Length: 53
Image 1 (cartoon, rainbow, N blue to C red):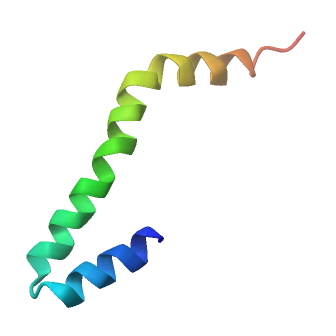
Image 2: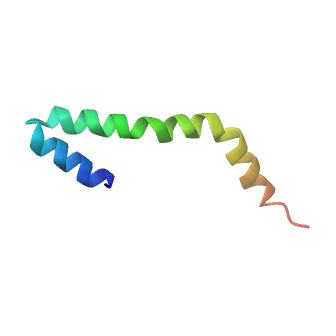
């Protein structure tokens, strides 16, 4: 089940826009945490690819 379908199903099951906001926040937390913990490796990889020679 994709994220969009999950949000629509939750919105139709529970009435109100608060449910949509809460579902969106819960689904956004894991990518944010991953980016915070892996940011050093992401930046290292981006700068290593920019070195010519």
